[in-house]
Image (cartoon, rainbow, N blue to C red; front, top):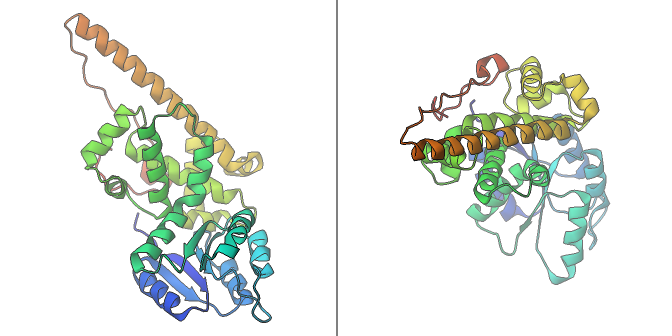
Length: 311
């Protein structure tokens, strides 16, 4: 899958900050700058679910105010799945406002008085991209999951949110592709390719839980070739038709199936290690594991990931 430039919609009056966003956006995003809340609302309605929104939370339609803009709260109410980032100077008297922004649904904060470099701003944008899926996934994962397994899954969620490949997952963890595969095996996780495919399905399910999103827009956002490709992938991974899945709660159902697969992989790993110990005591060597058959990714509208056939 080729990485698709995600829309970046900006409502902010700081010219220096906007220029930095423009420079970052020229490489990673499709940037759009608007002048008021109505323009932002229109742009967000026309944008795919993957759009990032950067705002000055103190921008008001009528005059300058010291309080948070009610227009922002209304926007977040209308678009609960939108990834909105607030960019502001973090002053002592605004600590309570930061808590309020989180309660409203703002996903990330850029502190203009501290994070004023291109790299710092870019890092915040990358963090916000994967944050919704990571937060939902974190709440779903069992407490018994190892730290290594949790790290790998969180990284996979971020890579998928950015439209990345298996090779990007290895790079994000600063591992070779071979070491990444070994990490997954040692952590009793499915192969990295399978993990990424699951993360893409769960990202789609997260967006499908927003009744305002169409199946087609979610499919394109998550890298599927068509809405029928998304439907096939969802049914393949969850065993539930997409229409029924939305009624049940798409993300809750998908995460439950994912955890079931994790538990199955974990049990298989335990059985394998027990068999290896028994074979060692008897002076035998077990034959290498045969890779389990995986879904045909092309039939699901998912191109094969570039990390190599072993993953």
